[in-house]
Image (cartoon, each protein chain N blue to C red):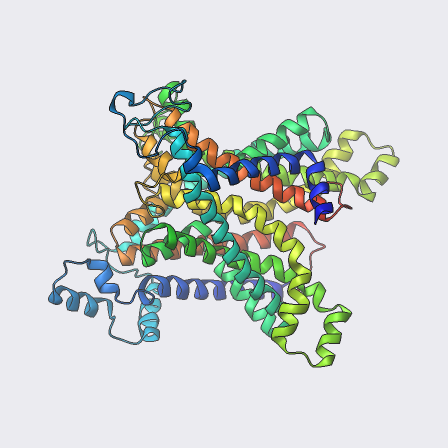
Length: 276
Length: 315
């Protein structure tokens, strides 16, 4: 584990990714304590105040400090994306490994159906689900997880197919182990590396998808300072106060970049052979 | 591309459409405990609820509801919009045509920019140009489209006043103005797609340049230009077909946001309006048409791929 971490931060992309994620983690954990102002504190004299010594990143249409809102908002954005990705990846991994284990016609049927489900674009699937389940952050997380599962299932299955033919799986079958045992104890642990890489990169898309749902008004609800919601709010005033728009946009982009870099870094660290 | 392969591929597309229609129907009409209640809201009278339930056929078992609905949809009847009381189908298809114009223009712009950039990055592998191109690609995929759209509008419309910020004008009505209104949305979609295709083109070109047949072509003494254009690019271009087809799926999702931001009356916006007004037939039609577009594009892309690359023999 430590060796992996050292290999990870030895590469520039891994190092930058880990550093950015450390910052984001601090914001998620201690955001409210570290923020210079309360995120809801209204200051009518400071409406649309430009970035400066009073408000480092400026103030919004109610004079609320944008930096404070960002720091507190990290909580309502990043963990949501993480949970959604974890749930979606877990479901997808189980479907993928299960399908590879069953093999033959059943595998074919599961994967064809899986591919068919993927014909519904992720955002569309999420929107449909949220419109049925009702607006809100929790339902948005469920929707993203469901939208993610088929893609993960496809990735996992392609890896698991190779594992299926390994001797230790054949041995387990010969020993008469149950299907559940073989799937969870023999196959899943051995497909973890590619799943972890793929999931890490997918967190960045989950961050964007979650922010998009909030932006469209069906994800996190006001007065939460979720980043997508902040962009939606600031759009009305973008000519008077472009900083209100740029700050949360940058926060979303940095988070997405951080997870992308970490994913790429992990790929390199886990497969030292691949030079590209 | 054998006939058997073609038949199989078309069968697969049919299966995809059936699965998608079942899912869309299940999510919109079966999953809600009482679709009529959730459509009409808290203040509905019992009479209104009963009338709507009868209209939607909600009292029948789920599979009967689905078969009845699918039968109608298959004959091209998507029902009557609950918002406008007009047939849904024709309106959605008009909206789709506007979205397709947006999508096709974006793909053209993307190909024109991304393919040369990706190749240049590969040729300058490890140098500053390569790093610059890769950095831009990273940024492109790390910004959600609503951010890219808003930032581009802020820069090109509100600050520089080069382009109109929102709205849609038919190209048939006023070609010049129509193009100007199309520019910002196309630019936004292209930025994201360019990042994608450029990355792919770069790594494909790198792979091909390392291959034995390129070395053979060089050893034969062919000029570098011939090696690059006649041998390397031809092969590196192939996966781009697949990537573009897969990106259509992304594109259809992204178009929902882009059309909403730039007020383009395409299928994405129609779907958003349907979702916010809880117009069930329009939601179902919009979702189904979008997924069908994706399934058909993918089938066409597979066929194009099989035609271009004679080595492919799908069984």
